[in-house]
Length: 611
Ligand code: GTP
Ligand code: SPV
Ligand code: MN
Image 1 (cartoon, rainbow, N blue to C red):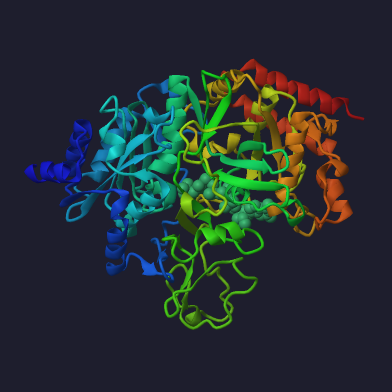
Image 2 (spheres, rainbow, N blue to C red):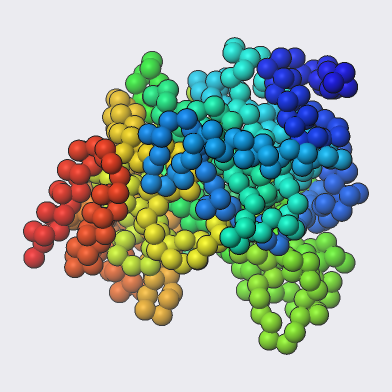
């Protein structure tokens, strides 16, 4: 292994525990070369990827890639959390014993990188100096160059993040082996893929995909599953699939910070990149901290709840992103940003890109256009109207490219949290916004978050299912202790954040969205902050406080009066039905704290008491 030692020395990788870890996996996978990566290598790696045909140019300083056609989203049923303690088994974490999973993954990975380069990607899932830094360091090993390029955009990457660790071995071991994508039986009974987080050993072993959360291990596997487990095991923090924004009131100079969870592909990125509606733009400005993950903790010095985004980039849904819905996102992937698009449509002559919803109609001149699979649109059979872009196609760009990035996003101390929101993709019942009365009701609401499944995961789109706190696919420990950990952490905050449930997706009989959404979503959030400040009172209902029309300040909003009435009211019979489903849903979880059941009974009783 003389070569390896030389490579470590040349790259300045001094952490001996990391050196041992890399050596072990280089031998096991049979990698031909080992290359230690830092963010400064990006331009060279991009050039290599272009030459190898892994990327194509998409205008000046932008790139395009296609994934294998059966590898386009996270696979929830192949994702497993393993530990040595059977009590870690929850309803959603797909728990397996680590003694079973580790040998299985090692067997899959043995010799799988023969002839390939193993890239060593040391990363940090936190701003440097964060109080949670000790949980944030990791080293991803991957055999795929485009995964490295995505990691450089999505995380802070370089050996400095792991050389100076207090405890040299306190980094997450994140091993990614792609495997032979064409022979893995994706979605068949003979599926070979496994995406395993061995949580009590802080080890991630992912085999069989090079797409998104399956392969960028700092993001979902470390930033959510591993971190949620660490936060619980240490008793110190929460790690949630949350966006995090600031709303600056230019008149008073105050900035409110709101974080919140919506299930995958349900609007976090769009909310975090929101422009204020024209009529409110002189007074309010929304700043972006994060769009997918937030870690939350209590600062022992001032007793306040703080939050930060552990990521360094955005892996955003392309579909329906346009000048009207999200101009901020479009600018974050302008030419020169070095953004990477995946699985959208691409014109090989002009290097243009397109996706459904980018413009109302696809490009009229189809010359040179290929769909996400790489097939020429011009050669499609008559009547073939399959989408040009995959519904889970994405763009990847770093935070510095996001036009409304918060000026203090890189500050290690995080930002104080004023509000926590949960939002589903729900076609009926859920009003535009309802604020909770207290912490227990807030956690209860999060646990009963229901939403339609989306294309971000393999499975049936549109199917309604519960998705507690939007963490169902990322849950790493049992739901009862999860609820208790939430009550404990937030309960310690000297100033309690206000909780609310939002829904931008209620629909009419004909399927149209009742609420225009996007930029207008600022209005209910402003109302929430006013409610928190005691400036408005709203209208109390059995399921929370909802705004009156006047309190929402709807000037300039394009909405029919009957639609407005629907989204600002509670359908009591429909809610009574829902309570039965909630009861069943919560009964699955052993050891759910009594406070949660009490909140459930309180809401049920209030609904029964309604006329
Ligand atoms: P993940 O990255 O998968 O976790 O998704 P996300 O929660 O960040 O979702 P994102 O903001 O990318 O939105 C997903 C889809 O919902 C996109 O196609 C958006 O155009 C659409 N969307 C977002 N906000 C709204 C809204 O207010 N109204 C409507 N109708 N659609 C929205
Ligand atoms: C999600 O599916 O919620 C994502 C994309 O944020 S992925 O990184 O693929 O998990
Ligand atoms: Mn997500």
